[in-house]
Amino acid sequence: MRSGFVTFVGRPNVGKSTLLNAICGEKVSIVSNKPQTTRTRIRGVWNRGDTQIVFVDTPGIHKPVSALGERVNATALDGADDVDVVCLLIDATEPFGRGDRWVADRIDISKAFVIVNKTDRASPSKVLTQLGAVGALGAAEYFPVSAKNGQGVDVLLAKLSDRMPDGPKYFPDGMITDTPEAQWVAELVREQLLHLLEDELPYSIATRVTQWEWPLVKCEIIVERESQKGMVIGKSGDLLKKVGVAARAQMPDGAYLELKVVVDKNWQRNAEKVRQLGY
Image 1: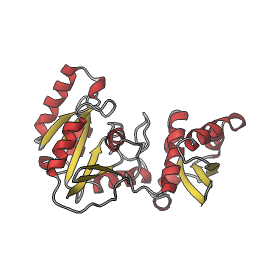
Image 2: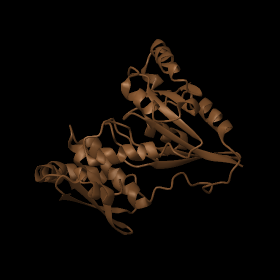
Image 3: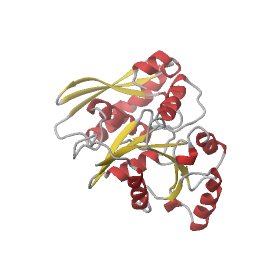
């Protein structure tokens, strides 16, 4: 048996979660078009023959402006420690810049794989330009891929498989993630809020399951101000209803999801509250 761990790191919104989901063949990590969607490490498992790779999706590394931002940055960088391969993801549609280099400087780039993602959205000439720009990093391998349509993913997986050492099967067949069910439901709720809410409000929101007595699941939506509470609930409760319907559709049949919005003033600037929420 060959097995090991691979971590995805990079700036926000480069497609780490989308790539993880594409590799696992199922939704393991929530996705949205808003940066900093992922706040904790999410693990997904890929099995082929006698090889098992445990992929770790980390939060996008960014300039923090709160205790929450500092915590998710630390989570991402910690995720690059003690793994077999670190993969630095770069957006093919955006110029290679200081933020990408800042991340590269914080990993052992000489042993890392650089993945230029979103090639489906960039012209071939732009992809070549991006590969030329990142080539100066001195990474071990470079891969153009599209997490959206799967192009290049098989080549990436083959190379990663070759790098895996002899080892045990860490997870049984059929298990694609070790994310607890309660955490997954809370993330599903937050994902829908990211889709439905505008501007900066989603970053002031946290979610947590407070009761799990199947089929009843109660989930709190935490905001920082009273004015935000009304925005999350929506006119006559319409927005909150949409969130519940969309999240419940991704849960097992028969689930009853109850949502409650509570105010915890400036929670994301309080390190202890950030920790209590599991970030």
